[in-house]
Image (cartoon, rainbow, N blue to C red; front, side, top):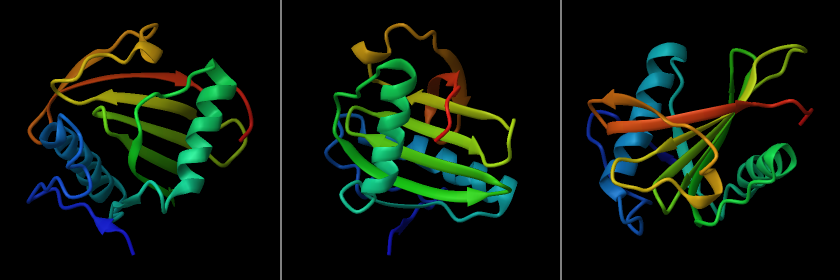
Length: 153
């Protein structure tokens, strides 16, 4: 059983080794609040070692689509389906969060999103992306970017 992310009482459980653990926990809680409010989905994460399929799926898409290999170790991940959309999230020690939104229906929206925790630098492997800023009560300032997935996964 995974860890249910609480967005009312933010905790760094599972993220303690990150140098920006508090900001990453806020980012994770921000995602949990979004899915609870929009889809009534309880956001649950597992250690990356137990969510190997989700971590591998995200890594494959990054490698195949843009030749990106994330250098930071994955700490936690989750994979689930809501409203016909397959979602995967991986939270990295550096403070990076990557999500894949993959609509199962043909011609649906499919994209990879990157979010940087407050206090972390843009990783070298993502230096080609421009990041927009977004304020969050839970996570401070979130910097985000994305790309559209062209292949089939």
